[in-house]
Image (cartoon, rainbow, N blue to C red; front, side):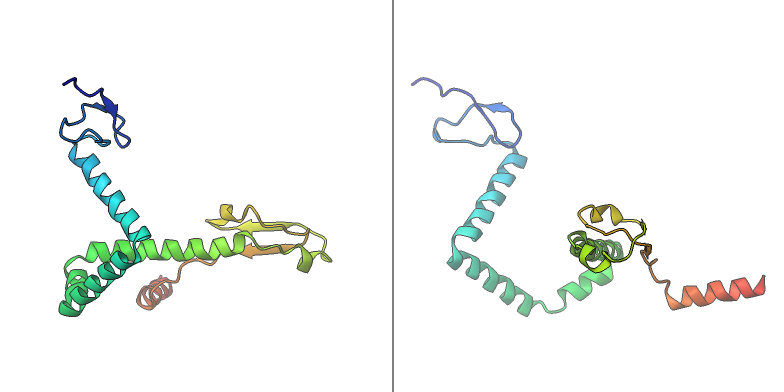
Length: 161
């Protein structure tokens, strides 16, 4: 029996020799590539098979029901993860707000006001699709609020100086 010709793995782009017992092998045997193959298969299976997807959701529900305190314990023992998640959520919230603003067309409302518009603040580069009529209007992005204790401490420090 002739050996099969080498193939290129679609994940790592490396050439590999397919197994004789699996002539249709498309993915190399590297653990990273096999993991990606399994993840892709599961993602496709979830998208294509509603019965399988519902079974997976029900399994997760059952596990959460049997382990109700898991996430509280996890958050308590992983404060860095909690802080990272909070920061990421704030970033997602900001992007969602800016995306909503990005496609606003304010020209119809501001058409009667001649002038110049200045946008000031971080994250405003996402507003490139806005259509603004000429007007004299300044839009400032608000700074994040300081916790009350920090703000009070800052005020007390300023008064003592």
